[in-house]
Amino acid sequence: MKLSNRVLNRTLLARQHLLERTDLGAHELCEHLVGLQAQDMLPPFVALWSRAIGFDPAAVSKALDDRSLVRITLMRGTIHLVTPPDALRIAPHIQPELEKIPFRKGFNYGALVGLDPEAVRAHGESVLGDEPMPAARLREHAAALYPDRDPGAIVQAWLYQLPVLQTPPRGRWGDSSRPIWSRVQPWLGAPLDPDYPLAELLLRYLRAFGPATTMDMQTWSKLTGMKKAVEQLGDRVRTYTDERGRTLYDAADATLADPDLPAPVRLLGWYDNAILSHQDRSRIVPDGNAPPLRAFANQVSPILVDGYLCGIYKVFPKGDKAFLRVIPQTAWTPAERDAVVAEAHALLSFLEPDRTPVVELLAPGADLRP
Image (cartoon, rainbow, N blue to C red; front, side):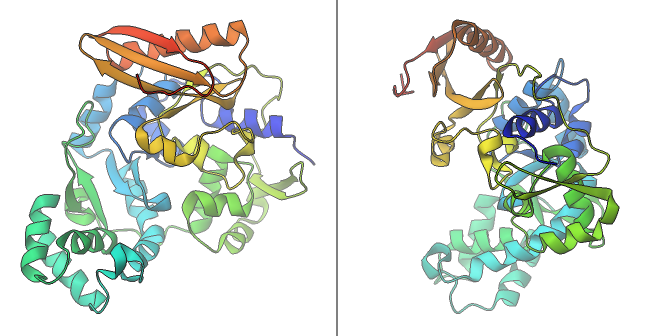
């Protein structure tokens, strides 16, 4: 069966809870979506606000404090907000790839060339111990142990080599303080689970992002061995083809969305996984209409209009006002413009409730900066 781009778009949005907000809580959404992109403080909160009815950001802050949610380096080597069971069972798949990074010749311009990886790891385990430690303290230890090396590079190596996570206060609502790091086992009181099958992880990916190719799965995870893992699922998956004739895999019991379903305007956080989790992003990013990904590093965020990335925005708090500046990437109808402005006001009410909201709709190609 051949699936149109429109079917893939609406199915992705439905599985991401972007067609209709859900009454699932933060923990359930993190489980279903296999984590939320959380490299910075704000994006997971925007992700949850855009997907959940009546989302209360205090719930995530509380969960970080009681350790029922954690921020840990997982897919694509980036920080994700996940439940502890997912931290323990996904990390063993990701960790071997992370550990290769520091000793590549290009890492920090060869800053670690000549060092014994196992000795570096042993020093890192000793330094981190069982208690959380700020990065500044880690640098002090690195400088003492390796006086002829860049301490920042040594710390980065430890954070790749060791299963670690970020502890509060960073990640709480409104708190973008510098990271404090802890080894996973002392913080969660449990060891990593190396027996969680990759095939099960990919089945969960399909339930949240499918139907998808094996290259899409690899792009999402940055892991290899996708075909073999999918084969292990047997009749738990079914196959389709896309408009280019590529094989798409999906959970056998998953349903496809009606391509004629309306898609409401959604304002996502920068680097939202709905945008990043396929090799071929055309199901949500129209060709030629997306900013380069490096733009998102400046907290530029995507706007979905009729289900596709058709605009960008950025919030600028200033004094007693909060400005949300919007740039369309395509021509919007008057109704679409009104819907974007309405959703922008709703987002500002969530992000900056104590400031006067100001939404500015700029011309295509304009500068987002005030």
